[in-house]
Amino acid sequence: MRLRILSAAFALILSACAHDSGTTTLKFWTIGREGEVVAQLLPEFERAHPGVRIEIQQIPLTAAHEKLLTAFAGDALPDLCQLGNTWIPEFAALGALEPLQPYVDASGVVHSGDYFSGIWDTNVIDGKLYGVPWYVDTRLLFYRSDLLAQAGFDHAPRDWDEWRRAMAAIKNNVGANRHAVFLPLNEFEPLLNLALEQPDTLLRDNDTRGNFQSPGFRRALAFYAEMFDQHWAPMLSNIQLPNIWDELARGFVTFYISGPWNIGEFQRREPQLQGRWMTAPLPGPDGVGTGAAGGSSLVIFRASPKRQIAWQLAEYLSGVAQQRQFYALTGDLPPRRSAWEFPLLQQDAYARAFREQLERARPTPKVPEWERIVNQMQLTADRIVRGHEPVDRALADLDARTDAILEKRRWMLARKGAP
Image (cartoon, rainbow, N blue to C red; front, side, top):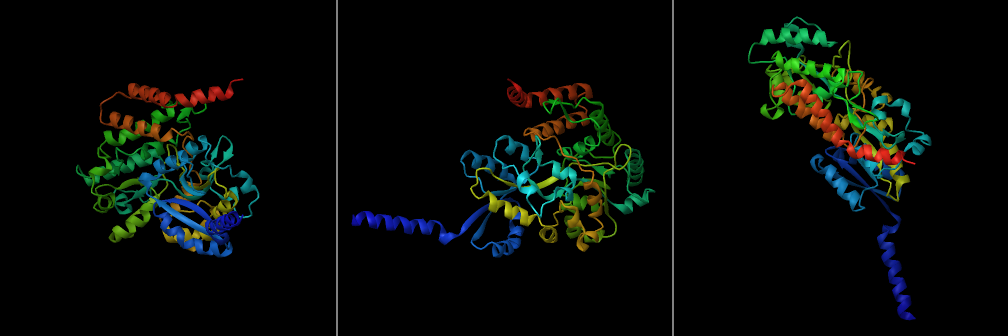
């Protein structure tokens, strides 16, 4: 009897230790530098939630996808996670994510109408909300305003015809060894953003087949290839240049398509360029264009037993005050319009073009296989630009490869619709 009593007492002691005297530990995984910075915002949350401790794990971007899939397979996912919005369809398809619409409906902080609509839409899969945007990006023009002025233009191009004229004039000015624009041949983003400005979708039949032979994609690809055919763009990958900041500074190129992180990079690395470079929305075929809706969102994993507390942290980090502070610490752009009503952002001339383009940003196709498909698109464009393959044959092959990648999606949808 005495032995049983001692055993029970010992079990109670162990249980108390395991629960850390009532402390709840919330596991929060972040990717890249954001993990270092967000820790500065958490003491206030922990003060407002006595007994809650946030355990942050920072994952390198190069290892994040594999680590998340391994954690899913091993039932070891965190409670809350930063997730790139192009990864959300994959984890939603796995059934790993908690649907968040009921939480948003009950929230006094998160209001969907305050978010840029294209960014919010990246988190909606098959009509269900699985993430809340944390920070955003879209890609637009970085350009040397002084070189553009020397070519006879007092403003950034607003449509493709104006961009053509500007690139031709710049090339005529700078000569054979310099160029008007840099479109790295190992990056899919420039062509993707041109393609998103077309009315034709990149996938068809409920996102189960490729649509790269469409008139819209052909038009985007023709303009992209024209920049190389006219020698406005060098046939180089980004690993063939020392770095883009120095190349823009020395005038090797005048235009470059990139995201908001490069605002800080250009300011730090090339201070002598102050007043001689600027940003502008991407030109479209017939007017100011659009760009891909990118960035990271906050998601809650369905297996977490602490989903309510995880939502409270996601809600806290989504607050306007926290978003403004996060921008001040990182330069990551906020996804909420009200967070942009902030002197530090309003006074940033380089950020204004992003604010304008975010209103028109569009999500890429929301299928788990999208990253594989877009890499195939980049390889196809590379072959066409280098002259190895006729356009008709290359695009037919790209659609065929896309259809093969999406075969499982067609099978799953067919099973779902079967009686």
